[in-house]
Image (cartoon, rainbow, N blue to C red; front, side):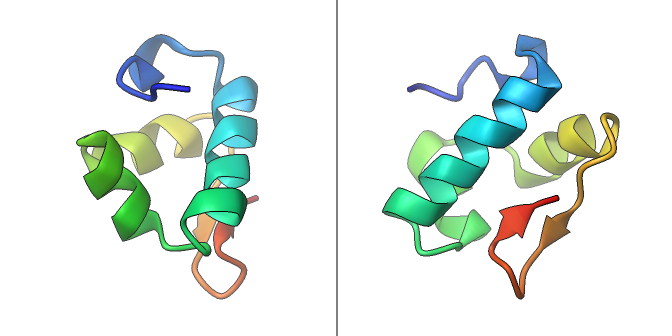
Length: 63
């Protein structure tokens, strides 16, 4: 799944995909995920925050 179009994705689906990728491919490291997909971390976090999801570094996922 390419996250390049994250700004237009349904936020609940986006959160689910990002959490799956964090869990399965990046050991919960958001910096690695955004570097791999070459996306802006602040923009991704803002998109998910607009739907009520915040990144929890200690859990390595958005909730």
